[in-house]
Image 1 (cartoon, rainbow, N blue to C red):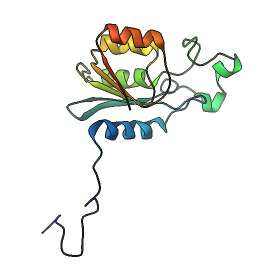
Image 2 (image 1 turned 180 degrees about the horizontal axis):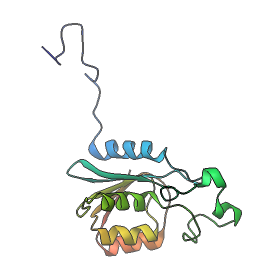
Image 3 (image 1 turned 90 degrees about the vertical axis):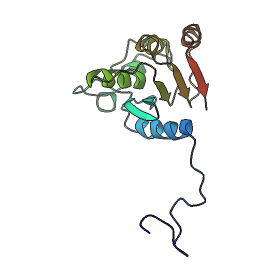
Image 4 (image 1 turned 180 degrees about the vertical axis):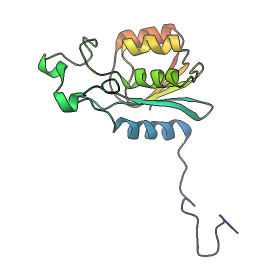
Length: 161
């Protein structure tokens, strides 16, 4: 009877709907985003293949360096609008960190799906294409038209939830 429901003692999720896979992984990247150290936007990402998480990432400064929550935001100080001049930032994007973490630990992301709380920027889109990622599922409203065009040209499926 271990793990089974008994009369008057229902299982915790009995009757509850299980989330479908995309919703499940998007919920996880929402939690990953809470680790972000960017003052402007918290973004989370996960690379998944065969319904298994390969790596996660959130936006923030490189490991061991002071982050924007500590020293302030260079982009805010220079009044740089969102979506412009990505190189003028101490932080890496969540997608970049997820790809780098996989590489650091010797995990191939070829054929993976990227789940992210925002649509990738053009810099991340180029990395995603070259990393062999085949599908992207996003939940946020951020748009980068050049990134969208390049991902479409590379035949990478992009789903918005």
